Length: 324
Image (cartoon, rainbow, N blue to C red; front, side, top):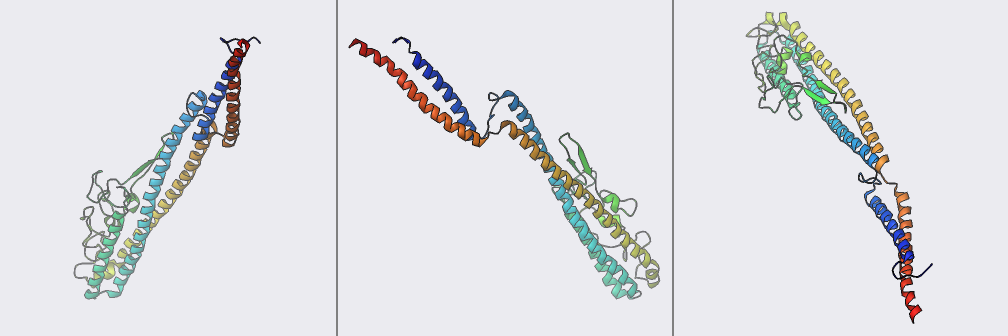
């Protein structure tokens, strides 16, 4: 090989090798610092494009999972309220049956009347407090979708169940509770049971009950707690209470079925999200053990390349010795 001060082929070869090593080293250092072997489209256009699409699916599935979680919270609150109402209704049945033991005793019946009206208030209060972010599936709450001052803005809940945009709607349980005709959205729960007259507006507590002081379906005992009327209508009073308990039991059964369904969909949604994340990671995540070994190798090559370039550059200085 001839010696030239214009062209140092050894230096050019060493520089080319060093530049290649530097490029590979920069890519490996980026992979180590980010944990990604494909951080942008220039790294691998196909893998980056597919991973980006999967990323959109992951975001969409996350929104689906959030919606299912919200629906679960609404149903949980509704179920707790429904079970509490059943307990109150059991107290109502006890009080109504006790009426039969006090026929003709106006003083005792007067106390039972106050007790029953108090139970009516409890039932409606529990129902309207079963509200999660404006959604209430028990209370009459809203009329024609308008607000009622109680924070209830909807009697139904719609949520997305899949990435394809499938939805499910849970409607008010008024259709399962309504034991009398003519009442629907905009009426309190005890009216739907037939336990209070259709006069209270949403958000208002009933002031009378249909057992002793109002007139529902012929169940009321006449004014003055007439003994003959009490005995005649007592079976109807008990029947209304038993029907209400059965209606609420049906509600809790339906709630339980929906809660199981949402729980299953939530579990599947989480697994789907995990699978999508794993698929994206397989395309873009760096193998850190491999990258670590590669980093050590490239750092060594870099040191050797710098040393080789230094030696090659020294050849030009050797030419001076020929002219001494």
